[in-house]
Length: 314
Image (tube, rainbow, N blue to C red; front, side, top):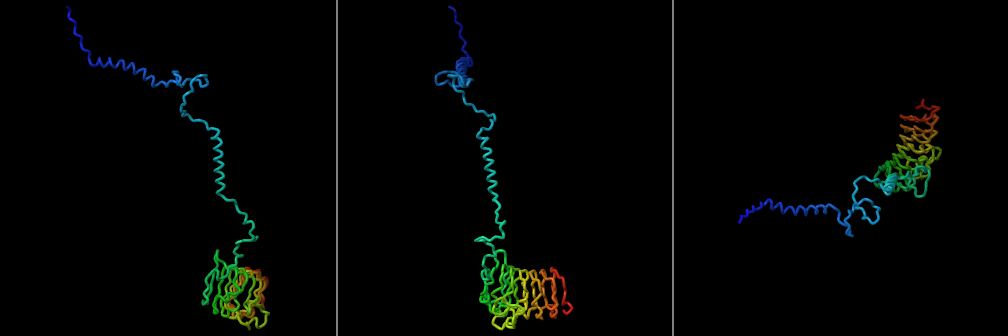
C-alpha cells in the first residue's frame, strides 16, 4: 500500500487569494454597473446619454450642466435697455426743471411773497420800549420794514431823540408827527419818494414857500424843529425843498437820489455838512449856497455839473 503524500497545507496567503478571486470577479461587474447609467423604467439597459435627441422611442437625453458661456437671451437683451432707461429716468428725475418765475420778475400775482408787498411795521420786527429815547432798527434779508406806521409816534417814547430805520423797504415817510424832541432821523437805504411830516400837523411837510406856521410849527408836533441830522441817502427823492423846515439842521445827507435842483437850504445857517452826490444836479445855485456861512463840507460828486456858483461867498 503506497503511502499518500501528505498534502501541504495551503498558506493563508493562498487562501486569501482564493477568497479574493470570486470577490474581485464579482466586484468588477458591480463597479461597471455603478458607472453605467441606471436602466430605464421599461427594463431597457440602453444608456440615457445616447445620441440623437429626436429618435423615436429613444430615451430622453440626460440633462447636463453646461459651464460654457451662453449668449444673452432675448429677455436679457431687452432687459438691458430697459434698465438703462430706468437709470436715465432716475438721473433726470433728480434734476428738477428750471422754474420760469425768474422770467416774470416784474409781474405781481396774487399771493406774491415779494418782501415789498408784505406789510411789516417797526414793532413787527423789533420790540419797542416806550421809555427808550433811542430807536434803531437795521434791516436784514428776512426782516425788512415796509411801513413806518401812521401811529408810530404813539408807540415810541414822547422824548424820542434818535430814530434810525436803515436798509428797509419804506416808501412813505410817516408817523413822525409829534416827535418834538427828535434830533437824528436816518432813513438811509429805503425807497422813500418824498420828505413828509417835517412840519406841523403831518402832511407832506410843505416846503420853503409855506407860511411861518408850517416852517416853525405853530401847531403841536414839529419834528423838524430840533432836528440836527437828516440822512435820507439812497432813496428816490426828487425834491429836497422840505429840508427848509429844519432850522437847526447841521448835517444833511441826501446822496444817491433823483434831485435835479438844489433848494430849501438857503436859510439853514447852521449847516456844516451837505452830501448831494450821485444825483442829477447840473447847476449849483448861487442863491442857495451863498448864505451858508458855517458850511464846512459840500459833496457834489457823481453829478453832471455845468454851472458853479455861490462858492465865493462861502
